[in-house]
Image (cartoon, rainbow, N blue to C red; front, side, top):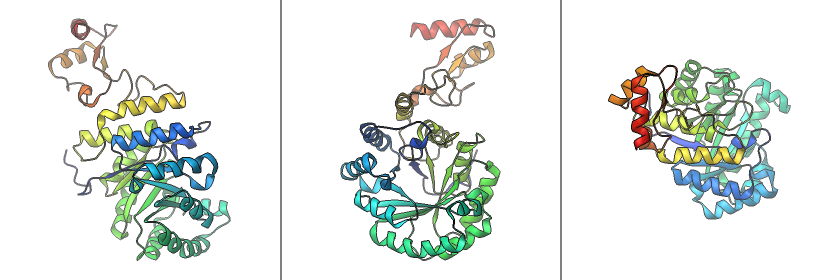
Length: 339
């Protein structure tokens, strides 16, 4: 199926496992674990990593200072709020690039005691300061999917002229559908002078679908986490989005053979085993029992699978004898066993 909506240049894959992923309730990576995971993500071909929150200080700051010295600075950035102390902390950690996030919905602005006028005043003060201190600055529109599009268009108009790397459109509480994301990205892209990035949460189980739809609708980048780690129901999943792009022949820089090792490694760190039927990286997602399916698979490896897992280093194809099986199940089981 031709993908007319995809951007002409390959989309950027941004991983936020080390920031938003670690905000999973009860999860706390050690400094050594974060350093290793940062290296694994970059080695896998992720374009950029949102490495952490500098203003947290302590071990978080020590870890960020370490990777700022040891990893490519243009591929890592720190997450900041719209506060000067956050900028100071990021600078002290050696960050060359930062992401500044702030709410755009009335509901979340009210929680901070802000309104649109206060937000604009803070941007007028802090954005030039950030741009003077860092080589790259991106902005994040929190709770964008519960914000009138007219408000975001007005804000984009005020931001024109600033050398912002990109604008992150966040479905912060995971309430949007793919159709809603498509419409939103298309409207904003027509008016925005900046590249758009999508960041989706999974409260209704649509985060990865929304991320793919955002790219189909013209977004330049998506932010994801390994295994969908994140607050509440988590985030869009890195391994699933990357494999979807691969099957649709959309170019990207991630080595698909790194997906399962990454997924298993993160599962080990979190103490949450991968469900056997987890898409892409589950241990039994290429296991067949139905006689019709086994019969087809023995003749064409793509008859009842979207991909050949061996090519991508995923779980092997298996055949099982069982209630729904037949002779083909037994033949397949014996052939796999012989190999």
